[in-house]
Length: 261
Length: 261
Image (tube, rainbow over all chains, first blue to last red; front, side, top):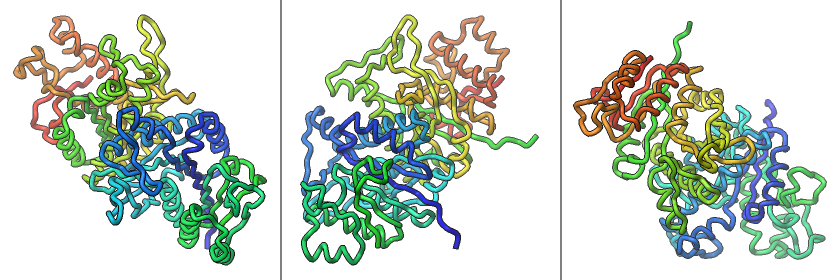
């Protein structure tokens, strides 16, 4: 079998977006990552600020935004407009040929409005399908897709979608064509047994150690669903998942957590 | 010489964007246009509304927006976010594989900040170069680029750019590879000798009749620079320019103005 080309999918969250210096530094590092790559970015504080500036109130349930019609307008403006285009322009400055996308663009990420169970999250999207073929065309032409956390339902409706989920779904979809490494950048060194102590970093988690870590309650409740999503991605063909600080993308010696099957 | 494939570049302005019914109807017609095509959209009222909602004042000089830093943030949000992604999602609903772009995306439209002469227009962009190669890759893969009126300077700066100009520059750039027809949709039947009388439509303007129309002051002062831009596009290789109502894209019997060399 012909060996697959490598592809890195890197997700940055609000903490990087909120800090202009951190974002500039990250985008400089990202531009230098060699080979095919995709960036996924979260929203950051700007959307909540904009909601307040317009006299509305951000509404969260279980740590997730409830997206009513006005909120959807605002997150579409801030994520797909302000953030996505400024990130793209900065990458272009760094000679990285970025192309900013939402899931509606090229029908790259198809989703459906989350079905109401206990909570009505409004215009929140759950991903159904990634169009790996069209993303591959972009990547093959030396473009670097930059995805914001907006998808669509192919019925004219835009949907607000969790950026972690978008990164995982893109990684799963692109595994059809590439050996995908999925990198989640956040403020910690990686998965920590004690979140306040870097010395408790768990450097590697595989399927066997995961069950042990779960049984012994070593992984925090907040981290557990994220880890489960990572293993779901691994079982769907993603080669490896890395969780660490943004600097990990340019400095492999920096400690981090690697997840493999 | 091998005959060039045809490409239609269609520009819609604020008057279509402002009216939800008119926009839906136009996007339905646009989706049915056969063959390779590109959509360019203006801004509409929403940006000015958003500027007012945020307690700022829209500032215009000679009919053009003065783009200070806050205004640039807002037009980036409204044009590249809200409008561009909603138009893209609606086209996707109509089975038109749209991909929404600013000039920063794929470095498709490079511009520079307008040089200050009498008026400082702030972050207004004048176009330097269209990357026809990358747009051709998209079009060849059955994607329909949808451009908003935001460009960049490849130095990290986004720029607010006139949508008519973007359409003309795209048409000129794409003429390298395609036989381009450039269609400007607006609220009138076309170029009228008396703007209030449809019966005075000038159905065809070529280079010879243009000099006559100018000498006799038949074309209004407001329309003249537009016409000059159209002839500039024709002289740069665009096959023909059509000016007419939005319905002209689906109904060729509808009267309109055709400009040819």
